[in-house]
Length: 241
Length: 225
Image (cartoon, rainbow over all chains, first blue to last red; front, side, top):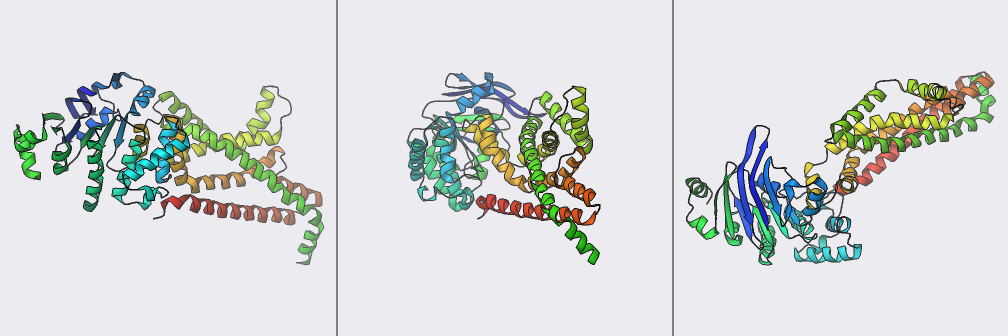
């Protein structure tokens, strides 16, 4: 379980998060939506402490992330995979090396075991034939699928997705969403920040609507999309649907 | 012209002696480059660190070594420091390597710092999100990318070191420069020995430039699309 309580985040004088609380239960798929600049990504990044909240607490299982030393945070991050909008594959490593690096270095897996696991995952995302390529030879969609596989190679308990399809060409969005969806179906606990409303509807157990640094609504996708309770959410959905 | 040719003939037996000085020169440059690289890396990490004390120390170090002449630093290290501490005779080549290394570390740290800054911030985040700690992240993810970016600048630094190493002739290290002076004095003819050393320096620098270009191309393999 991930539990964020009263998260406040300021960048200098700019208040990005104004008291955000959210609980993500085991097996739950939470989709966070909202207009640009509403603090969705910042909130997600606070969960694994890529951003240090100005105040508030983040619990991952029994670990209080916000009260930890950097070394301990690093340890907990093994359990929380993250996928970024811009992939951030390691450009000087091949696809396979991207996948086996952290499991070997951080979890101490033998190379054989790491490679076996990596090939399994690459096969799952349909990119086993690209294992010896360098990332810049891949399309955006392929890069993102590799990035997802790389995060999964650590066998995390949670996955965070930060606008995983926002940097992709339209025709590549589906291949990435398919991978995320199959992950959801396998029971992975996930938090997904996205602008893909159709996808959100399909995959979410819970939809969270953020605006101006606050969570305005938190509801089932059915309820949220058919009958949003705030004017702001209504307005937002009208504009994008 | 005839006189010139005959003067070359006169010093001919000493030409190999001069040319072999290049090994001393390159040895000093290489030793100093290794010290400079290690030191420069550590200093650059101090400079980008959040710890104010480390920032200050690294910046002060760089300021001192960049703010004084190398030949002055060398004289201080070879003549003044041993006397101050009563160390007696010190090995000039060792002092030269260390001093050049310390000096180069200051310049190298600026180069490496700029290289690290040029690495996408997302690379730090991706490594962090995978649970990779600070040192392995720097060693395996950040520095390899940084160094690739700054390889031309580092090669320049090495070339500068090779050329500047001629200063060690002032503390009686028999590098190529010193040897050309010795031979000059021996035969009382300046042009031929110095010309030999001059040409040799240039050829070696050309070769280093060429090697640098090759390494750079090889490392950029993963950039090709």
